[in-house]
Length: 278
Image 1 (spheres, rainbow, N blue to C red):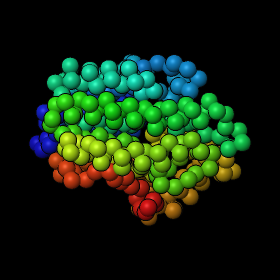
Image 2: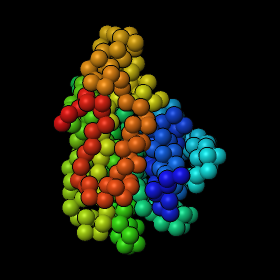
Image 3: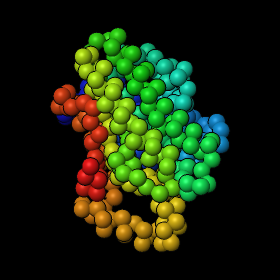
Image 4: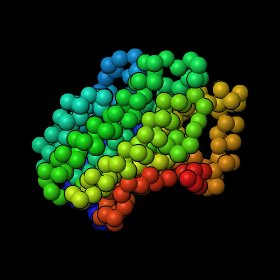
């Protein structure tokens, strides 16, 4: 069986929900042979992190156990990506538990604080920026420190969004945070290239995970449509005729994590079925 990532260790943040995008990414990297660290918040810690939107410790372990049941290697580590100390400890866990840190996927994000512009509170804005943008900066820095010290190169991949390229109503902080990732990888890639470390974004369009289902209901209501009609309109504007699947994004991450992508860096790769051409 082809296992192009055998002998490497991957961290995936925000991977603690069984039907989530992060879990799909972790499963694909594990299938390709990587030892995978499943990371998530573990429990709600404030108003911005409700239990329905984060990976609890028990569910994190269930994601890891499913990987082990399929013959993969996985561990778990609780981490609040807003806290530098937590992210640095996550990088330490990867090396201490699995022997190296070769792939880091910044997947943790807030995509559920959506409001009309005039109703957005400063705390709403800050919560989204802190997780989506600052959290990704923390991940890039922590991963790069380990990768530079090991002198083996590495792969750093952010899960951005179609919202990194286009604007959407009710998503001012979300779009700003994802646009910010484009500049972040362009800058980081310049500095880390000499160490053999690539830094890229993957930019999926809408994916109906648990979070995606919440977004479907929210935007359908704002549009005055049923969820079914909202999804039908969405599919009609996508050249490939459907929204994204978790596996579509996971496949792109696996490619960027592989040796085949060793000359690709500073890019923001659309995985949108042709909906986002920019």
